[in-house]
Length: 275
Image (tube, rainbow, N blue to C red; front, side, top):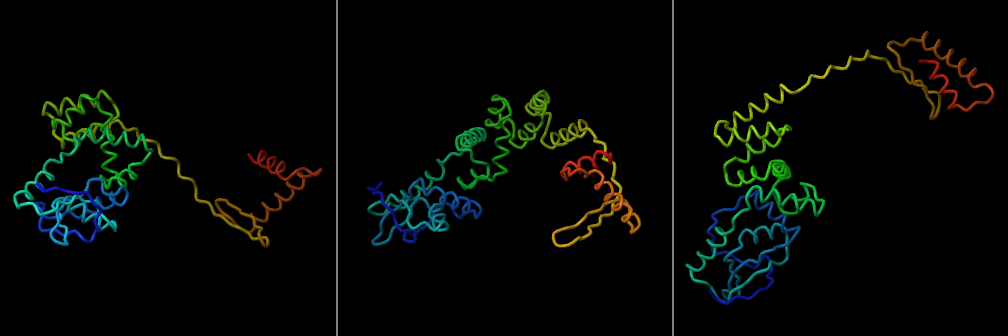
């Protein structure tokens, strides 16, 4: 392969003569752009010089995301001259096929460790890393309630993640273990698992008695001047009953407030006598 040197290249300068990746997934590019905006480009692009031009050999997605994130420059390792067509194809194939994703539980544990160290929420992690979504992160973290042996089964593909998540939401540990064994034996498909857990939760649920509906009450606010008002509430209100209540209230306040007692003490006495 040609000799290469590292340099920061203006984002609009690199050009592409083709890529083994036929198209970009828009949602993935948006997430990658968010990650690059937060953290920059962690892995330099690879390219070569052709006269005054710099051609991208690997890093087309990163370059597209850098433009979306409005980065002024991108880090590149640039060869002095163009690789052969075979060299370019091999480079792109290696770059795209040797990037092995973390296993499900490896990712779950890594996310949990990151969130513990940083105190980030699932939304924070999603933004910083450019994905997965907060909901997906929450599901991955839920799987950590399962025993390590079961986590290994998930990574080995013996228990599908969708089934594992349903089991992880079951509160009773013994019931989780029973469901795990049923899935491992092949006797319990995902659809049957969903139906069974729903039925179990419904059967275990306790129907709470409804609170008695309170009788509808009328409410009236009587303005007394700037910044002053009296509020009245009762099942029914009329002029006669309001006059009677207010007259009675004035008499009770006058009696309870004798000898210069504080208003707060008067109100407490009135409230106690009203019970």
